[in-house]
Length: 303
Image (cartoon, rainbow, N blue to C red):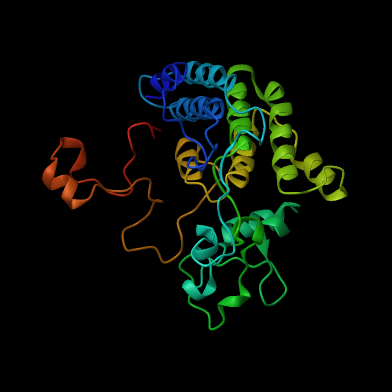
């Protein structure tokens, strides 16, 4: 379908063309074509471990698609349509309002950012009422005062904050992973470093600041032993709030996660998929959609 869209984009557009009603690119079809190639790269890298697929082939396909995809943050697919007006706020502002249920940041994310002295921490998170960056541990007991926990900061959760659909930094990390597969850690390292720098610059950090320089010095080196883990860890920060992080974790097992304490009886592994709805099972019975458990693997999520 993406190939067809790219081909059809070369045709004469006809009388009706998108403009201000296009919330992503305001009718700029050249950017839509780059978006199509960006999605192709994402889909190719999904299949590096899929049955009857070859990692090197998928990496080559991803790199080829990236040649025609975003060239910078000006091309990325971002919904920048929100405002402070009632009913027009960003969905992440509405979803993370404490009054809407006490949505706070988790300890897995916060602890990793704190442990690595990540300079993006204050851009991503607000301190809690105790003046610390504190994430809630999943399944932990309810506390009397939820304000002790960190919440999502304004860059992501202000009423007018834009929402990334597919950011440029994701493509840079796809390129780093694909290069790692084809050419090894040393070749992937400068691409990986640039991806981190570009994401930090997007968040408004000075790349010359001591905190950023120190972070890159500690996290910038890739070896055959750490390369995939570091690429996926950094990609997960750049893809904060994106479901793509779930896809990447299933593909690579990074970032490292553990089953929460007090998990539901009998649950010993992290869920890997959604089951089919009962309506789907009833109206479209297929062998693959019955007796599905949330811990089963989808077809491309092979060992």
